[in-house]
Image (cartoon, rainbow, N blue to C red; front, top):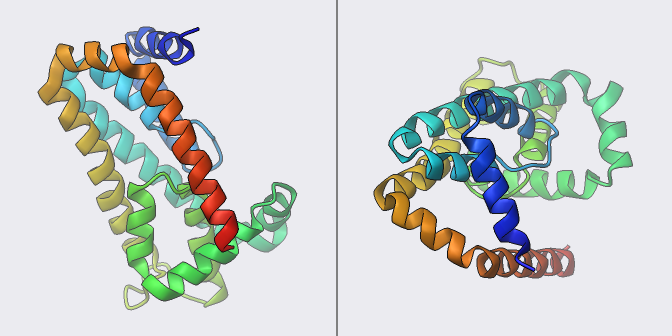
Amino acid sequence: MKLFQRIYDYCIELSAHPRAMFFMAANSFIESIFWPLPVDAMLIPMCLARPKKSFRIAFVAVLFSVLGAVVGYLMGYYLWDVLVRDIFESLNLMRHVDVIEKWFHEFGILFVAVGAFTPVPYKVIAVTTGMMASSAMVGFWDITSQLSLPLFILVSVLGRGARFYLEAGVIRLGGKPMAEKIRRYIDILGWLTLAAVAVAILIYKLRS
């Protein structure tokens, strides 16, 4: 059964919906706060369905993803002790917070940029950064601190922009032939991706 090909065809069909851009904006926003569906799951099919609008689609993804990350930052800053900590503990996310804090102290703001570009759960990075800023009593606009909100927004734009515009650019250059090739090999790519994720999780747990 071609599981991933069916999912791919559904995403392509959804991306052609008249309100697809609205769905993209909404998904990009809430994904940076709590939603588990990656932005790429809508970005790539939408770019494949409308290659000439790929950069516009990427812009919407970056804009609303960063806006959602700012909300996550503010939640960590203001609501960590009264709400967010309990949610993270119930979802077994505190171990991720500990790792993020450690990596942030080692790599500074660069880690946020890397997290914005890679599949690392960016929602957790955003909330944790806000929590650390609050704990360190860093003011929002104190750009002398790597935990300040302006620097967080800047590296988020750079990281998310690099990721989403790269995907959009590759698809725009490839056009329809790219879409046909992806559909042909989507099941192989899908299972390889799941295998890679499983290996990454195993390595992460062994190193924790």
